[in-house]
Length: 391
Image (cartoon, rainbow, N blue to C red; front, side):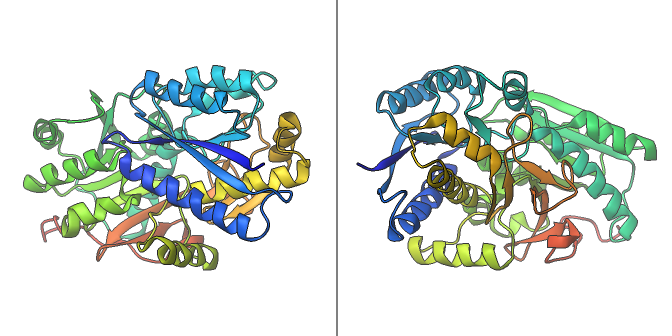
């Protein structure tokens, strides 16, 4: 009898490219593990269910189907109903490894560790984005490679239940040096009318636009609208450019964009080996985030099952997930802290062997270069091409 991992895959327009990354990364890990004899001598199998991550009803239906099928664990990306899922998953008790990247859901596990002890977030939370962005701005300005025309930042963010990208932390860091933060919020998740947003940005005339948005389709649409009416402003966004379709859709228009992720594939020997294997298997390069997360998640589970000795001993498996430290393609995973979320270097741990680096990239020559942390950098900042030459 196989050991079965259930995985809900997002198929809605906003996340279908993510689904490809998640499915491929998990499939690659399963194939490698099975080639070495499986888990405890049993074949590992994926059971996928399609859902629309923007629809709570669709997501909950997918999870209930997996539970009815009695899968041995569930791995997933994110959805619009994380809190509701916790109740469903807590009752089932099987391990649940997700990448919702939300402190609001980690806090629930932190407050109810007995009830929610089978729930693990395999990346750090959204609240780290703001402080890390603030420190990057300080470092960039100090380097002399960029001079802001004023000390104003505009944060643009959509409506997403429970999302908190750490704007308060950003203000704490940058207000000391005179920076002012303006916020444009309440935007829908999809089909945003970007030209009026860009017009509002022009009125504020910031030195930096912090696009607090994850989905690549809307991030690309924003960039097109911005380039139709550009400013001498840096564009710094979250996660979305990690998906290969972002670069293929924007082409040269993506040049100069800055972006960050709390969990990304390193450009080290481990990351390059994974990328080469992925390319051989699927005929395309992986993105810089979710393919690696999905691959690492399966391997983390397989290791915990092997140590526990029985995939159906759910509590024992959860104990092993808390005890282990796994070095994957996206860095190191330690899930034993309060809240059972992975640590991020350097925000929540000064030890890179215990956390995943909070990576800041810049798109350069149709590729992604890591600018920070310096320990992992493989490139240097370039002034974006839309800037006037007087800057």
